[in-house]
Length: 190
Image 1 (cartoon, rainbow, N blue to C red):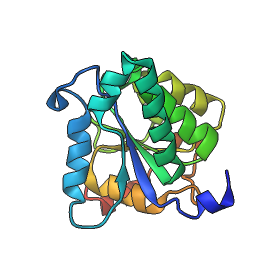
Image 2: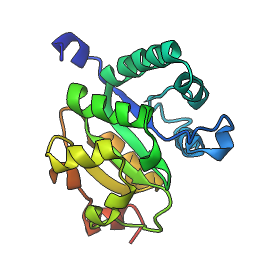
Image 3: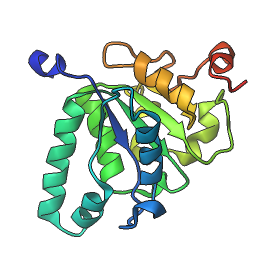
Image 4: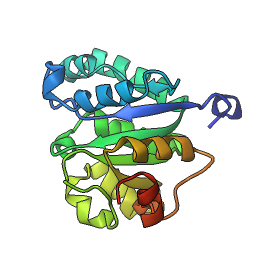
């Protein structure tokens, strides 16, 4: 990546599955909105493309390419990616796989994989959650190209990961990074 572009990488890119729905309350955009609410006054810079645009683009090839161009632009300026993983994320066959592939293969940014519906308040064995992973994530974890921290969808854990991990500061553990029990105690989750 061009050094000049890397200097401006300060945002957090949020990826989620729109589930083919135009109703934002019926998809994982509700978790994006929760993140926005949590950070309404702290200046955290989130970048994403509206799920309505994504859904329309699936049926319109020219619009899909316009969306992908916008995704690339936002990812190029991001220091990390929060990947919201819910029960249907692995079923996404268009934008989430593209976002993961571009984030890892081109941008080299870490992925903060945050799980919405697993029932976990701490994650100690990410491989136990592999059934939730989109193929694009699974293959990059398997081939060692993805740097991923796996956390529950809890504000303190997400805030810590957003502040800690970037293209210059990758999580330990390659694609299977986790927080320690001490960190979870600091988050108030243990």
